[in-house]
Length: 450
Ligand code: GUN
Ligand code: ZN
Image (tube, rainbow, N blue to C red; front, side, top):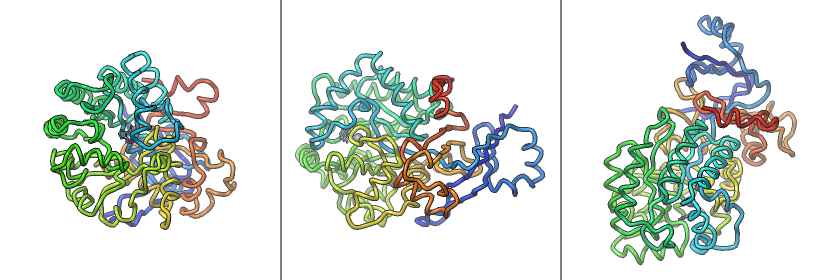
């Protein structure tokens, strides 16, 4: 028997259009959304939908969750962050390579302890849901067992993730430096085990950390493996810090650039995700566009490590696929609302409109991940990944914000939003976070169900 639930509230969502760049949205102040077996089967204005003969009967028989004046939006998509780094947020004061050596590599070494790995994974997925993130692209560590535990926790909490075991076989501390062949074999086993698991909510990403910690053998082996597992992802860092770029140029002198190096190893294509991508030239952007690869822009992290400014307008003009990433822990907050605000603030001369920023962290991210047929917007036929927001939970928000035009609402979310406005998070129609249940101490019964 089908499971049907209807939701009432103020529905706002970007929508797919045939052209690109117009960032169209729907806005139903008295909206209704019907979810059947995890998929959206009807959506629109409540009064109009109730008059439809087929729906009238259904609505009289099913449970209607009424969120009143709260906002219903698609869940947020975080295109790049690190599970093992949640313990290391707000450790400031150094550029990338020094920061990795001082804080991150010691923290990641602890993931050889499986109990510790499970405890942090549990915390990580609870935080993602509490921030309204319903799809994330995640680095773990080099440890296979810790990565297994991360996938198990993702499944248990009904999280939607693209994740992988990190690969490093050069320039890493001894505790994190792998034997090349073991890294490749281990990654292959993980892809086999987890890609498409939990009814497709879990997907695998081959995850070489970056050029600095990779031998040519590791990268060419990853390129071959990635080809052998269609539908999997390739996730890495690209051209984030000057010192990193110089090191990579020394390690791979035959490549024209950092991006060209990845391309030569067959690592650029549909479903490859390059985080940061700050210091690129036109040839690099052209390659990214031609290959259908995606960039994860991580503005909060770029502020925090003082890595530089992503060429937002140039990347957009070039037609490259891109979305936003929190890059926790170099990004100090997991909330994509804060990341959107930083994406605007970090540009010294240009305004990035709230409409576009909300698109980038929902439908635009889904598009960059080739998942816009499944998630990213509230449209009939897509899976019901959504959040319920109460902007008034935040100080500074006027009490009639939801009576204002769409652009004012989106602007309020971008410049004032954070985790405090997230009331509920749903993935494929299942409640995975509820602030009310958290406050009464019953979060575990929801978030850890299944
Ligand atoms: N480049 C290689 N590893 C990392 C990492 O953990 N964080 C960031 N921001 N950049 C990286
Ligand atoms: Zn990163």
